[in-house]
Each structure stands twice: as structure tokens, then as C-alpha cells.
Image (cartoon, rainbow, N blue to C red; front, top):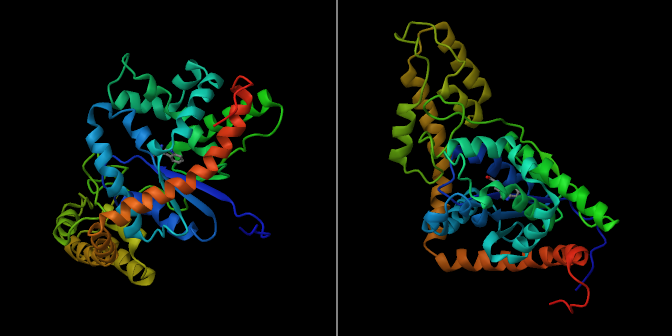
Length: 342
Ligand code: TRP
């Protein structure tokens, strides 16, 4: 084995809960950046099935089915498993052991203050019956991030509290150990913000039913574009149209590379005299062009499930080398001396 003399590349860790197909919102917010980052950084993607179980304990089948589906979405958008490590969280019990130690470094009150978890508890109507695993998933996420010694964690703003929580654990552990065992992580906030749902709500989301999936068929794409929220005041073609809150234009902003042509279309729309159907025809064309190659690549890989599972097993073994080292370091702080190790 040769030891590389080149300066180590920064380490990125990202992940998704495998609870359903990934959609255009994921593409804009994270997948596209992962494809761009994979050669520049040492990137690992964690299929966070253990985290998904914290609020899907009774629906494990859904989580298990979606592990390979999410992996197919990664391959479809162009993530290259030879350069990006793709691994499965429940196959790395090292992460579970780290979580158990880290739980001693946080308080229940601190966990209850996490604004993202608070909002999720409200949405799931957990109220007084919060599963302990759910309340503490930010600690498990801290285990994920620190186990890989990630410097950078690409996140939407809803995940910023997780990074904060992680770094509190890092500092607490390093103080206990009196040396720098873990490294602090920094959030990498994506350049393009959130994509609205086709219904005009602020966020595209599977649970809100307003998403366009990356694996959508041409007919599904057509139907979704037809339903896209535009400008309720644009009743007749001649009426001046509005761009604010207009989902068709928000999507064109995200996916249309012909910026001059798009600007012309916007000017015409605002002046009046341009039908919504013209805007939607352009949008449909762009989305069909974007999603066709993804769908085709997905189908090729889906025809070869062994490839996908082999890739996940190999990625997980590669990941284990890294996380096992971190676990050894953390164990040195907590394990009763005398054990020979494993
Ligand atoms: N919480 C993330 C989500 O809901 C998924 C996730 C789990 C994750 N572990 C992670 C993201 C580690 C970044 C780093 O999408």
C-alpha cells in the first residue's frame, strides 16, 4: 500500500433517510452538489436507515425497500461509486456504539430545545409519547459526522442545529479526553435555496404530495407541470402576470440554462400577452430533458440489483475502516481498561 503525500482532501459526509423516492428538491438542494463535489472532496454518502427507523419503527419494510431505491437515485444522477463511498447506516454498528457513549455528553433539556426536532415532533403528533430514539437522533447524527471525521456537512438550514449539537459533543469529548480526538464539522450551505412544491407551498416534499420524483415517467412529469401553481391573478392571456410565488418560473430559474431566453419570456409574461400554457410548455421540455437521462440510467442499474447491493456492501466495508478507527479512539475514553480490544 502506498502512502499518499498529497495534502488530504477535505472530508464531506452527507446522508438521506431512505423513506421514499428522491425528488427535484433533493436534486437542487443536494444531489447536484454531490455530483460536483465528488472529485474535489473525499465524499461519503450515508443511507441513514437507522435514523429513518426512529420514526418508522412500525414501518420497517418501507425503510428497507427504500435503501436500494435511494441508492439507485444516487447512481441515476451521476454519483460515481468508485469515487464516492456509499454506505448503509445499520450495517455499521460502530455508529451505534458511538451514539451510546455520546448520549452521556448531552442533556435531555438540550435535545428538547433542538428546533428541528421540536417541529418534527409537532408534525408527527408525538407530543408526550416521543420515542427516545427519535428525541436522540441528533446524537446518532453526531456519531455519523464525527465517525467519518467530516470537516464539511452539506445541509439545508433545517439541519444546522444538528451540526451545532455535533460540535458541542466534539468539544465535550475532547475536553474529557484532554486531547483532540474528534474534529469539529462545518456546515456547507448550498448556493441555491429551497425548491417550492408544485402546489406553491414553500417546500417540495414527499409527505406534502407536491413533489416531482427523479424517477417520474414522462406522463407523470407532464401531469405535474400541468398542475404547477402559477399566478392566480393572470386570468386572461392579456393580463400582466406576476413572477413572485410563480412556481413555473421558480423551476425555470432552477433548470433553464438559456438565461437570455428565459428573461425574454419573463418580460413578456409581466407585460401581458403570454399564456401560462406557453410557460408550461417550456418548463415541461426542460424537465423532460433533465430527467430522461436519469431515468434511463436508473433503469439500467435497476435491471442489475446485484450490482447495487454489491456496491452498498463494498462502500460499507470501506466506510468501516474509517469509523472503526474513530471508535477505537472514543473507546479509549470510555472502556474499562484491561479489555484486549476486538
Ligand atoms: N438528517 C438527515 C436528513 O434528514 C440525514 C442524515 C443522517 C445525515 N445522518 C447524516 C445528513 C449525516 C448529513 C450527515 O436528511
